[in-house]
Image (cartoon, one colour):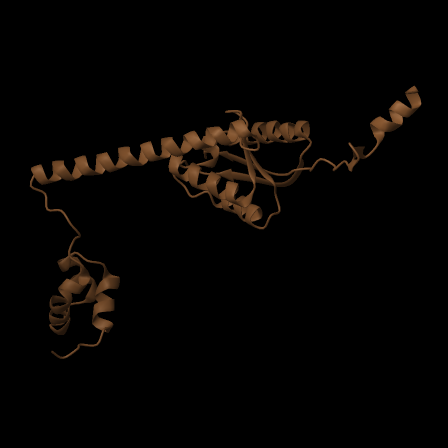
Length: 219
């Protein structure tokens, strides 16, 4: 075979007689997050994430930045998840797992949703790539850790309740405003202000107003 024919064959769109399908170009959604006191690392995260996307040949369809404390709701993360639900991105790219999830359980829940949507997930620092078989096997381990975390929380709650009982503390829900309805109406008829009723009965003023607005049902 001449060199020219070999070159033409190599460039042919057919493989074993079948038309070669072009490789899919992934649309990446980038998520960068920092705490309120660590905002200077946002550019570092974004630069590293963008460079990684370029190396993988991915296009960047969406870039999200978020600043907040560890316990705060990740509102901008929801924007990225909405894009995934609309099939506008094919993979989510984050700097580190704790940037994405509030807890192991939260992390697992979002990863399972992305998997259900057919959207990949990559965490750069942990080298976790759920677009590969090895990465999906790692995700299965996260489910084990999430259950472990839930069991620890259940044990702590049970231990706390047991200590409270030993110390003679009364358990259960506190008395609601509805249980004070008779006293509220009696005090109000006696000329006591709503704020004073709330103070005496140690309930909210809105609860007092709600009880007084309700019609009295005759027995």
